[in-house]
Image (cartoon, rainbow, N blue to C red):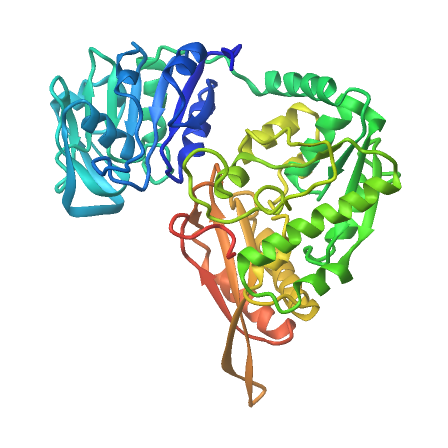
Length: 522
């Protein structure tokens, strides 16, 4: 492991679910950031020479025998350290403070107050005396270590933040990285620039140039096969590869029967032969609908569905690779949220397997899987797409999961259920666009619940499905808020769905944020 070209902030992962989000927030400030397991040695840390270190949250208690920990020497390296949630408690515990079970747990949006010291802290420059922050803890710091000063508190948490400014050690019990913390971005900006004294030398144009050069060097004269869904991630990955290796690349689009309405036709028009965008790529469309439905028949468990789709996904590509000759590399549009939610690396817990990450089978008939966007978040991918000259309508396209509508159907997947979701989703999308809301909502879709309910239609009793509508706003897809949808839009959509979509007599709107929910239903 060598020192990166750019100045960097190092994030040490203790198992929290927001760990990659911390990296994303740092990178928003044009400072390169990497996430590594908390077990990273002091020698490696010194070698990397980070400008600052951030200790993440985690699900454990710092005072138990099997607690996930790090060397106390990390605080003596002369490198600024910010501890968040579990990281703040670990800092307190290792440096002689007292951490114990809180009399009252805090979870969710909480008003945090800065004291007089906090008002003058570098970490809280420009932050209001009282602001809403996101808490998620059952333990708390009962006593700050010697040399530390408390800088913020809540009615039930006496040490909501603390610091030893002389040693450049800072800690927050709350999570500044999530969007629920009103001024969290300002706090992390302050840490990066005021505490760590970074200059901000990492830009997306440099990422694009470096990645193209790296792909060219890695693949050499070999052939690559790219999984092209037509979504933002796979499209950007395809163009990166195209610029790196040209006609050595073959892009394969798989119609698994789980796409949005008219999606196949749209993707083929964008990337297929004679497309109007000038994409000069080898493009193959594979009709795999029957084999997918056969594999998914009777399967209801979400993770099993994802695993089946992931394995079949690879098998289809292996077959196509054999048809075009020896293919050395499989390229995918995997991005950072896919990786963290699949529980790969560090201490993080699996939330769900993604078809192109945790859903891969054990044996894959390629020399290597290439994932040029693996370290980027969705908005970074869009930035990269713009740097590559992709049209805005493609760069700004709605996200769509690799497993497709299979994870928007609760229970078993059948062609009939897919048709219901496709029609309901098309109505939802059409009415949101008509209302002029499509640009301010990050993701929206219709899903089919496994619930049947009694209804009355045409003076007759019905017993049909309930459709769930989802719409969220987010910048990073790691946290999200439910969109405050106007009732007139919901009313119009509801009326159209129950009148135009067969076997649906009830419509719900999902008001749950992320967390505690995920953006997709499964």
